[in-house]
Length: 404
Picture 1: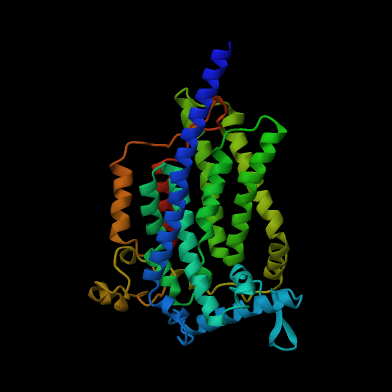
Picture 2: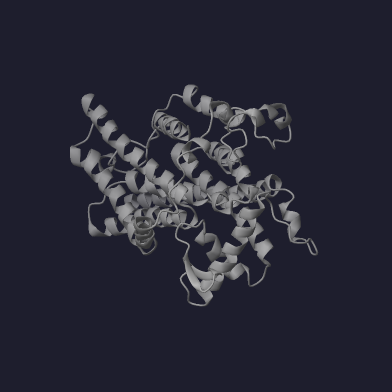
């Protein structure tokens, strides 16, 4: 009997050692991904980092001077309001002494919160530059975590994070659109949303509490952070959440048709409840801002767009495939964009050829349809696996059509 116990203990120690050996390299990959994105952020935003040198002046990236100055004021105002006990969404500093609402202003409050401690040590312009660098580093790291969770391949995660963080669109937002530069919380929200939906089910209060704290609460919180930056990104994140819910329903019906699906409760009801809990957490967090925002929408009309706003801000088909005008390698070959009806639109939707190539490889050169989640007891999983490549392809088509 003692020999059997000793054998079991030795096997357990061996498994624990193997687990530690696996964890240590993974931690190194985390650090490596962060350091890689610090270096790439410096390269892709060059010469921004030179502004941190002594006597470097007060330069910040961007050619849209009105947006640049507005965002500098935003950083200053949020800090001033919080330190003086004022509501940052209402100011009398613009049309003194009449209060002015900022609920529909691109205030990007999260960046203002970052500026609260930073402005104790750095100037306003250096703080602005730190916010820009932070968005590239954290956006890249968040995409690294998300892609690794989806496919389980670290090299693919590194490449995917580079494609996301240093896309033509993200580089273009450095024209002084600080609220659009800060897209770093989107991949974190998607990561925790997927974990909240696809992690194994809970069968007691302790498991539910653990899931709530580790999955649902972070998902709602990161969606809240997205809203503190920009309502556009919030809308896109909610659209993706809706597509995920629709996918779960369609996938369940398809599996049931083939005789492989689970019960209605496990296949559809529980995943939808999980999504709902994440959204309820977000709703509680955002309600102090959302309620007065909706009230203002019902009493004023200044934020209603012009009749031609949708058309003038839409993308055209060639814009997805032609390099941006400021592209330093071959952007000069596509100056014909200036002659197009919407050629002067400053927003960029260029896919980049490398990203299109990698997307083609992912769709047509791989066979795995849906990554499988490892769980000690497959019966406790609420779904056979994560959304596969065709779900993400449909999402791309959906948002592509909306851009038109």
